[in-house]
Image (cartoon, rainbow over all chains, first blue to last red; front, side):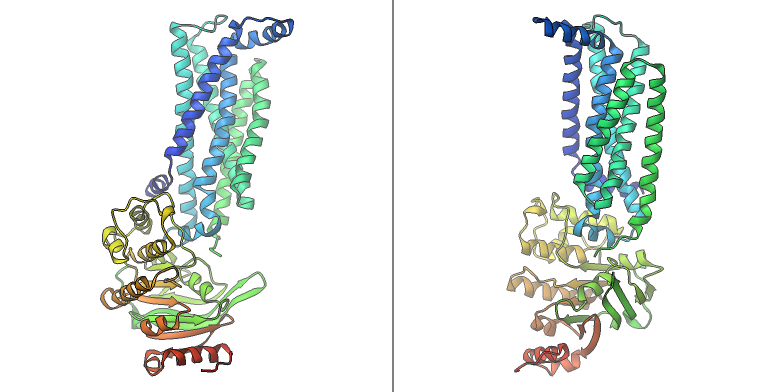
Length: 250
Length: 248
């Protein structure tokens, strides 16, 4: 199994995915500083003042900024994982590419799981490094040159940030897996991508708003949602192995 | 298993093989036997069921009914052992397009879990440069076909299944591949099942030819009978078997 996962990683041109992750990282870091800088903007007109009054409380707290970045990161990495699952797994079962898989003396189900695991490795590594870089850079610079003036950076805030980040990464991966299964219905990479985009938007709206209200129940809902999504996604992907085992190269 | 001696030198034994897609029966009760270390040619009109039969033999399709034994191993119980001993070129070859020819072959050998030929050696055998780092996506049709043959052969299979292997090759390439196939049978003890519409190629290559029509093997002709026939007569024989009148 480990050898197969290694081969799957080797045969896919994964450098381009890391370039994609780098772009997401840059975007998230830029947005983090944009959010933190908003309270420092000078409002001119009365409309601008009222917008500033509404936004300043949100962008004056580390927790609010980190939640927004985690949510945006989830949307980005859900689409990213949809793309990777489509290219690492789905595309190999579409058209004549399936011929390559069927002539190998390897159980079809084993090969399918190796592809899924290889894709999960790329997604987890990319998302973890990307998010860790964003928050580490932001918080480390904040220690020396604080931009968020209305809040004090504590170890508790850092811990909460990384916990939320981890839960949203699990959600991104689960959304990708669910999208993969839906993409398999029509054997379409486009459907996989569109599904991951729609699911990430729905969950980001639900969870983003709940977490920003600061309700303690929202954190528990996030944990439950991440766990449920992971279980559902795993179940869908594992149950599809039976279908893969019966696939033929027509 | 690799290296395992075959009983009574039968490479392939098919009995009552059927393949049904939906309500269409593509292969109908097909039975044939291919002797080891020989070249067996399969002829037939388009849609006769040759490619479907080849796909079943190479593991791409699962038969609906019937028995298929390759090197005395049953496809139902020893699929992986059989596949390790088969090299195939069926339909338009598909590659990992962003990789070079050598990288494609190395990956194939890794998936097949065998050492096989040296990649440089097999690329030279099919007339490709081993140190060419160009991505396969930029290869010409002929180069892709040569690479597909290299991939089918590189893991030293005991059975080669080749469906129209010389498509896209120039006359020199066709001659080179013909010599390669003969070398593989005579020196490497491989068995080859090949289909082509070029009758001259079949006549020069094969020890035995089977004729398929409407999903059935309707006749066979041995090399002894072949030697007595000219190409035009083979063509006439083919027309006769296919039920088409000929002026030859």
